[in-house]
Image 1 (tube, rainbow over the protein chains, first blue to last red):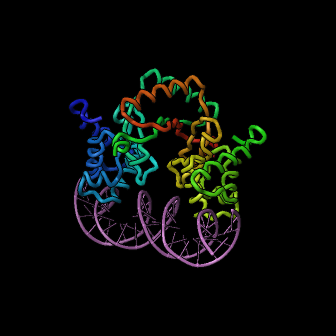
Image 2: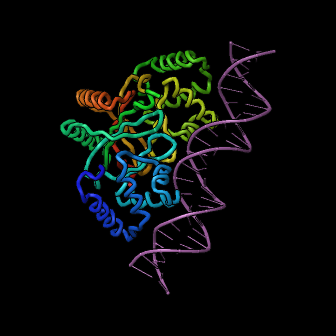
Image 3: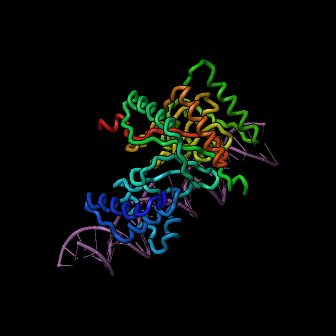
Length: 154
Length: 154
DNA sequence: ATTCGTGCAAATAGTTTGCAGCAGA
DNA sequence: TCTGCTGCAAACTATTTGCACGAAT
């Protein structure tokens, strides 16, 4: 999720820029910095974390820009139940499909993946469920809830 | 999830009462009404919905009592991302394990279950993930995100 | 009598929004 | 020049909390 392959970062910016332009939005420096900050992380982060990491973004702008980026499918918003909502780059942009380990104690979220065959099995099952419920599904989410190593230790 | 078997309602109250007593808490009429209101629903509901259904509970008491009930494992709190948090009776009390269809448009949540073999497969996989990440898992959640029939139509 | 839950109203905190200034096209 | 992003401060709203009253043991 980081610079897995050289140049992926600029490809990322190209894609985000294209998506923004498609809805008449500008890929400003501030938005680019947000995307960079998100790309530097390999886990979902809160706005305070982003503001601290980026030093110079106003909280309100962060909220506004992340909302815009979410609308164009560049970032995803995750409600962990902790005080702050968290954001990460959208799976579509990063090209990987993963799930989350959510620590109930500190709110921290980690990514994980499951074997392809299990994922496929889940998707098939969910497709059936959605059809039966006449529900227009756009995504699924599989989270593991519990306590992270740090919190168990501390 | 409703009165599936006759008498399950009183068994439910017995169990909740026992759990409350175990931590020196009283199973008051107000708390009993909340549990009844939750048992009457077959989907997670918000506090405003509970207050409206119950007519006579103060919002603050609802929050406080649901927090207590959550602590003793009688109810579960669900963050759908919509304006209000939702609550439902804990799986342990109801004896069923289910998942959620979450409508991004109206926030409504419906329950669904997956075939036992798929569930087992998921659990095995997650157990491995948790072990590898040295994560103390207490639960998992598998949600389907999208738009419900009503919102697609309307 | 004493303890603890309840309701009301005030406080808190995350998120959103109005507005004036500034930057990029 | 014009549009629209940005930051600051004010506004909102779900949730929490302080406090005095009431119920139950």
